[in-house]
Amino acid sequence: MLLAGKVAVVTGAGGGIGREIAVAMAKAGAKVVVNDIGATVTGTGGDETPGRQTVQIIEQAGGEAALDTHSVAEWESAQAIVRTALDRFSRIDIVVNNAGILRDVIFHKMSPEDWLSVIAVHLNGSFFVSRAAAPLFREQGSGVFIHMTSTSGLIGNLGQANYAAAKLGITALSKSIALDMARFGVRSNCISPFAWSRMIGSIPTDTPEQQARVAKLREMTPDKIAPMAVFLASDLAKDVTGQIFAVRNNEIFLMGQSRPLRSVHRDGGWTAETIAHHAIPAMRASFYPLDRSADVFSWDPV
Image (cartoon, rainbow, N blue to C red; front, side, top):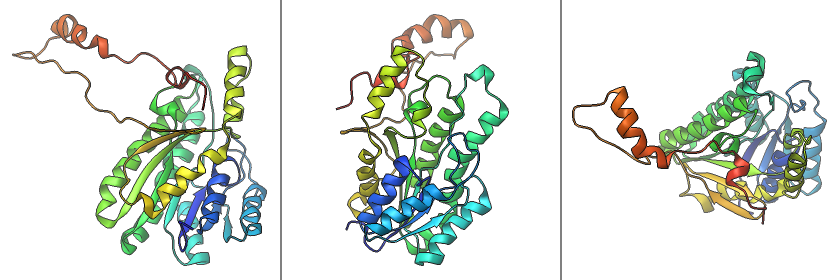
């Protein structure tokens, strides 16, 4: 019962990774606000059934949960999500920013709506819900933020400029929260999950290569992500903040954060020509290739 007495808000908890995290936190003793608007993968429509099913799973196992169907993508509705925790359970200790949508399309065909809708849910939503909880965390001198990022942003992927930008932005948001709120005993970390979910299920399977990739992803079930979330939310992680963890089946990775790789110096400064003839040749060996997540994680999950 690592989370006994704590109250968690888990967004996008109507299925997949969010549901598994909500259920695991309830099993660990937390009271859980199950937030989900029940939209499609692309963010259209709404149905409270998925969220209500998660609540029922928790309650049938003897836990306590409350359903919330507000959108994370608006300031006022994010405030309402946090109010649900206060109204039902009188406090809030944990925020898991998991809600997300996909609008995958190659960059030169991406519409403004494709861009804005994904940024609104992932990046703005993570800020809005976190910001709604922040004053309460500050007042009580404790609190935990757990944000979902992706190797699409940390490394790269095709056809996901909107999603990648949002997910990499979330890592910067998490680090900023960790820096700004450390003095109040508040922690903030990211999880980059590898798991089969409804969102991953939209990956094309038109080629044998794509089919093989999806087959591997199906083996990585969402429940493998939940233990890391429970750990980060618990007092066992009291000294862990500002970090990015990737979880892939039975593997856990601590992901890097941007730091200088190489440097060059030239007395009197640089011109475009000296950069071309001196600086770039000196640094070229350290250039990153145009690799994708699958290129970096090239071995089968274990």
